[in-house]
Image 1 (tube, rainbow, N blue to C red):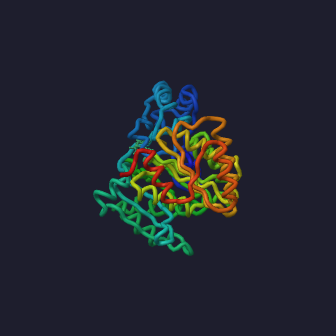
Image 2: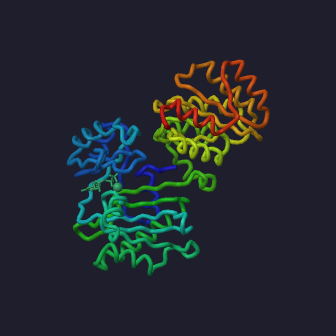
Image 3: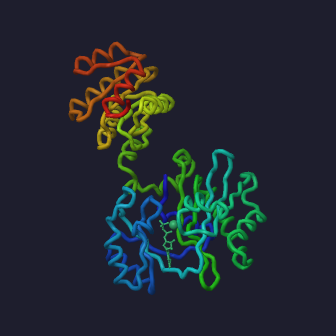
Length: 379
Ligand code: GDP
Ligand code: MN
C-alpha cells in the first residue's frame, strides 16, 4: 500500500522532521482559500500514488491565491501514470539552494533496512544510479540497533560538506528511520531534501510504501488507505480475496496457487507469449471468485486470450467450471478461452464445461501453447 505525499509528510513531521505545513484541497476554490490563508508563493501538488509528478506537470508554483486556483483547476482530474488526481496539496513554497535525495528501503537481499542518499536529488534516483552511481551512498542498518549516530553523520557528510547542514541532515535521517520502522514501511523517501538559502535543511516531498502484510499490525497506517487512488482492478481483486498484479502482455492468466501462477507465466514466456497479469484465485476457490477473476481479466483491453490453469486439490475443479459458466452466461467473452484443469472433481468439471460448449484440456503445455497462439504470440 502506498501513502499519499500529504499522509507521508504527516508521519515525517510527527517524527520531528522539518516539513512545510500544507493542506489538502479537492476543488480549485478550496486550493485558492488555502493559498490565501498561507499567503505568499505556494506549491500546488497532485496527490497520486506516482513518482515523477513534477515532470508530468503535477507540481506547480503559484505566486498568489488566484494562480493557485488556476493550477489546481488544471491538476485536479489530470491523469498521471494511469491514476486520476482527486486531491491537491497546497504548501508554502520553500526557496531552494540545493536538492538532495534520502531514502531507506527494506532490502531483501541483505535482509535489513538500507539507506540510500545522494547529493544529486530532485530528479529520478534511478537515473542517478544508472549514470553516476558514485553520487549515491548506500548503507545497511542493523535492525537491532537502528541507524547509529556515526552512521547518520557519515550519510550527512556525504550529502553536505558543511557540518552546519550535515548535522541536521543526520538528525533527519535518524528521524526518517524511526518513521520507517513505526509505519512498518518497506520504503520511506525524501526527494528532494533541500537546503534553503538561509542554510536550513527541509523535506519538500515524502513517499512511504507499506507491505500489505504489515497492515494488520498497524491499524493506524491501514486506515490511511485511499481506495479511490488505487488501480480499480487491483482494488476489486483485493476485495474478492484474489492476488492480482497487472502486467503488460496479451495472455490473461487465471490460476490457483501462487507457485502454479508463477510457473504458468514462465511457460507463457517459454512459448513466446507475454502474460497480461498474475492472478491467483487462492486455495478454497468458490464460483464467485472465478466470476470476479474473469471480470477483472476481461476488463483489460490488452487481453487477447484467456488461460485457466487449475490444479485441483482443495480447489475443486467443478467450482471453477461453475464460475466460468456463470461468468460467461452473463456476459459473452470477446476473446478465446483455454481451460486446463486436473485434479479434484475433474470429470464433473469437464461435464459442466462441455454442456456449456467449452472444451477442457488436462495437459499444461498444450493449454499454454494454445493460449499463446490464440493471443497472437509465439512462433
Ligand atoms: P515529484 O516530481 O513527484 O517527485 O514531486 P516533488 O514534490 O519532488 O516536486 C518536484 C520538484 O518540484 C522538486 O524537485 C522541486 O524542484 C520542485 N518543488 C517542489 N516543492 C517546491 C518548493 O517548495 N519550492 C520550489 N522552489 N520548488 C519546489
Ligand atoms: Mn519528489
